[in-house]
Image (cartoon, rainbow, N blue to C red; front, side):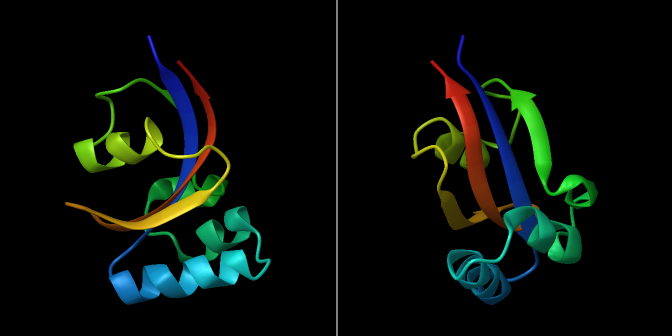
Length: 93
């Protein structure tokens, strides 16, 4: 069964999400931005969500994590919780 590891940043608006993504693309550290800006409790640990299988996260999240490029920051991704930036750190098929 597939498994993946990811970290994410959760914010309220698409605009804020895009602003944070630009900061990361310009060289800011993902984990530091997560600690400063993420509204998810995982922000305290740099946004790290650990390892999970398909179906353990909301569908919009799963779709990105199990189909997009590893090591790249994806988003903004809208879910029922808000807007996410997602960095897939590892994936096993």
